[in-house]
Length: 136
Image 1: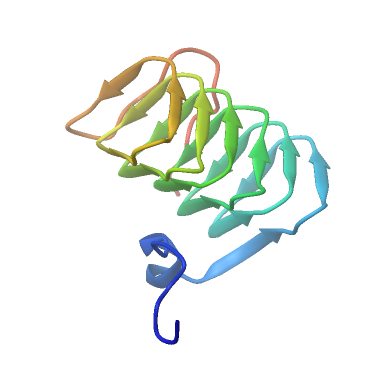
Image 2: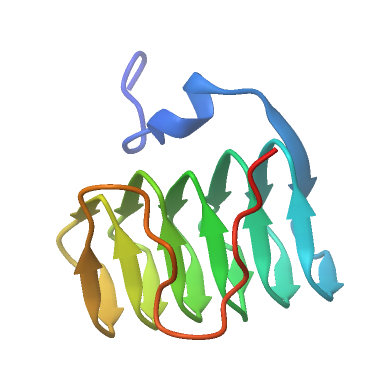
C-alpha cells in the first residue's frame, strides 16, 4: 500500500547521521571503534565501541561485545552489550549475552538469552571484559 511502512523505523537512524556502514555481505574481523553512529548490515567478528549509536540491520550480525550510547537491534548479537542510554530489540532481533542499559525495549517475538542490569546513571562495566567507553 502507498504510504504504509513495512515496519517501525529505528528512531536512532533519524536522530543522528550514520558515519560508518558495514554493508550487506561484508565481513569485518577485529575490533571496531567509531566516534559516530554505525550501521551494521554485514558481519563483525570482534568488539564494537561506538561513542554515539549502533544500528544492527536485519541481516547484520555481531560476534563480540558492544558498547554504545544507544543500540537498535534487528539482527543478531552474540556477546555482552553495554548501553548508556536505550537498547531496542526488534521482533527480528536475537541477543545471546548480558545487557546493561538505562532503558530497554523488547518487541514481541524478539529473542533474548542472558541477564539484564538496568542502570539509573552511566554504567561503569557490564558483565566482564567488554571495552570501556572512553570519554573525550
